[in-house]
Image 1 (cartoon, one colour):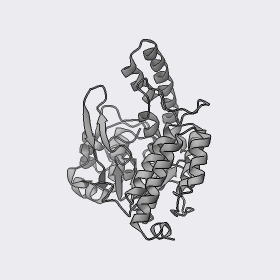
Image 2 (tube, rainbow, N blue to C red; image 1 turned 90 degrees about the vertical axis):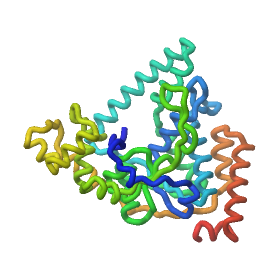
Image 3 (cartoon, rainbow, N blue to C red; image 1 turned 135 degrees about the vertical axis):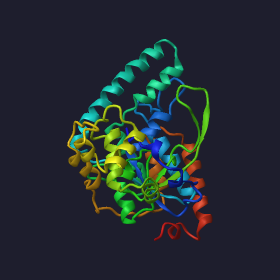
Image 4 (cartoon, rainbow, N blue to C red; image 1 turned 120 degrees about the vertical axis):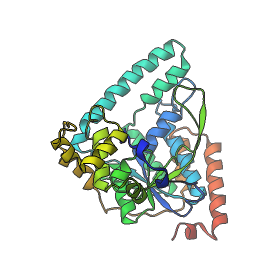
Length: 344
């Protein structure tokens, strides 16, 4: 879901960027977030995802492979962070999402039967589900490509934010704003969906450009502490707590500015909450993270990539080979040797 605070992000906290400007910088991506994007968007006109001969979905691998190739060609150093065990407070959200996906699946089949391909594709995107084999195959692909990944003990976004705050990477990369609440000094958005994007329910397209949101600028511009930003998140709803009825981001900002904290707003009778404020706030301030990771970019093993994508998942040998050859050529031009580029 992601905490919905986009409407109060001040313009001075946001900087448009590009892959070229991010060259040489390491970005920790929330792997589940980016894989879900690929599962939702890489589909045929009728909403069906890419599949191999055995019926296994491969949209996530297609997106991950070609987008990562693009990152590396531009000099960006991606790190992918996979979710571990979610906090207990998130289980209700997970269950609601599962019910929503099941309903979307039923609506998809109905739309397909009626020949409404536009509706079918829309429902298919909402029904996208990340299965265990998809996560495992994504990790196998990254290993073959020489790109590091981290298995978080809990939330991937929390781990990515921790790595950014620690200085292991330049920024966290995600479409969701949660990384800011988790304390990432920088959040890079739109890197996996750069280009033209169709507006939901309309036959219009918008140009999507990468952007960086700076946490310090955001807090300074709004006159908030990080704890108060988290309280705004708690008011509008998080993965761990429901939205306070009738409170959107602008109203939440007004409440927190007026009362100073969510507890004081509750004490004053301004709002009512149905969760333990301190417990949920602590999930953002003190999430489960780990220092057990090594960020080591290596030369791709073209043999292993071909073995996985072409021989195991039926990708086009020509397309995969062409992408790998272009990457090899780019890296060779950038440095005297691949080893030098990858810091060995």
